[in-house]
Image 1: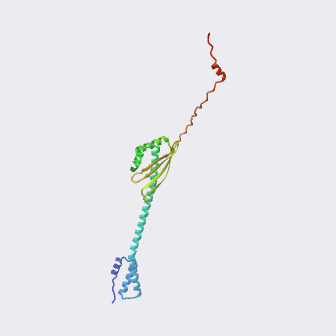
Image 2: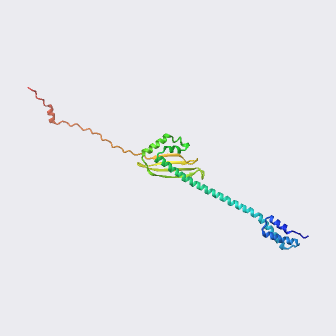
Image 3: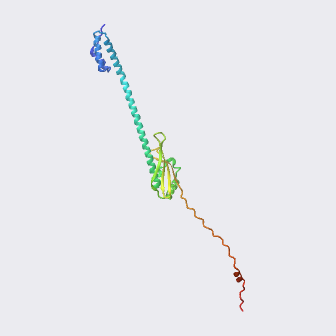
Length: 239
């Protein structure tokens, strides 16, 4: 029995399923052949072509969405790594700048107020006001330091990119010789803080006084025979 397919319905169906323009034209030819009752290899090839295009249209959007999501994910990961690396470099510079400022304020300016504020709360017991007083007294006895202060050290991170800690070694040139200020700094809160501090110096060597020679005991000279006769001669008696 011949089949009859109306052209408007075929166009509507093709557009609803989202088929490409070539599939719509193939559908028109196939519908024309079916309406005339023909059954040839050409119609079978057209039917296979339409089915293949329909399958491609159903699979192509899914693969495109996966590719877009993969690109977005890689972009987010790359941006996060770049941000963390920039933050790490900024923390390294900030740690070195804080250590340089601390050495300058403590050694050059002898600022007890700065040191009391910068010491970590956990280290306040280790460095009480009496300890800070002895530190500044020693710095005063060493004399006026000559700038600049040479700072050396490194910064480590406990969690890869977080919790920076710095160990620094500052060299100070005093008139009597160099001294060294060791600083351990960290940034667990909003501000940098000093976890440990120590001053190392070489005590001034006092010259040893030369020993005073002790006076030697000289023997008493014995009197000559003439002096002995004079001592024994009696004195003249007055008449």
